[in-house]
Image 1 (cartoon, rainbow, N blue to C red):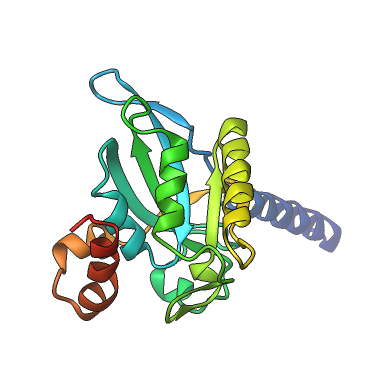
Image 2 (image 1 turned 45 degrees about the vertical axis):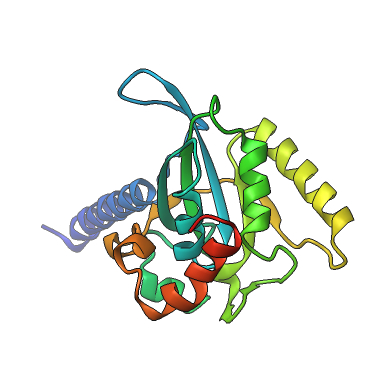
Length: 212
């Protein structure tokens, strides 16, 4: 086999390998949007909201105690890398926010009421910060799943801004891919009520909101 044929075969082989890698990369980066509505096992129509208000241990603990909320999952959203870990998130460099995915029954609680509680349970006027938790991962964010949610979020922000002295810095963005956080983050307060952060940060917040 002459050098020209060898070169042609090698080029064809490398092109095939490269195409395969591109295909794998495209597959790895494929994301699925969360639908604003879902049907539970009893054929009941539920809705979904994604919110971030600082440490997800706090917001999760709040919304798990609200009537009409069927499920709360802590996770990450809004960043640039796939399948981020908590260790990566903590650097504040991935672009993700700590958020919760809330599944609720719209016949029991409205999205507007959820936003009201969201405003009450965190400081919407501090940029990339909630108390001692500092970094972009702790930003105040509403990630809407429909145009109706977007409109309601904008209305909520406008009305709240009129009530507060400092400007509301909550971002309102279209919901990106949501990554469920590691298992030990789920139901964190419920599982670790006497842990330091839970005792000194979460419990006082729940008491202030008359949820404990």
